Image (cartoon, rainbow, N blue to C red):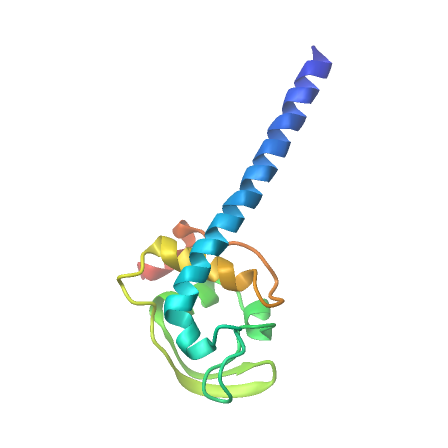
Length: 135
């Protein structure tokens, strides 16, 4: 019986890990569509940004070092004022992700950015976006 329970437990863990990996892939794929449709206009398709106007998202120390809640807030509510990204100063306005994009879209695009171009990885959930967008 103990062997059976160990086997069942191991299988459950493998299934959960496998499923979470495929969920991450799905979130990233959906997020990539949102990114290409909206974010790439400023941050470029490769995440490199544009000169001193739009900061890079690729290999961004800003994304790596800022708390996730602040990154979500930037996308959900917009961002203005001076920031430093990879040693360069940027002082502009990033408008909020338009309301026609859902909380799920925001979570997906953030998950995509967190897992692209050498960024630290991780996921953003709908609940995290709702908590920030609601304020």
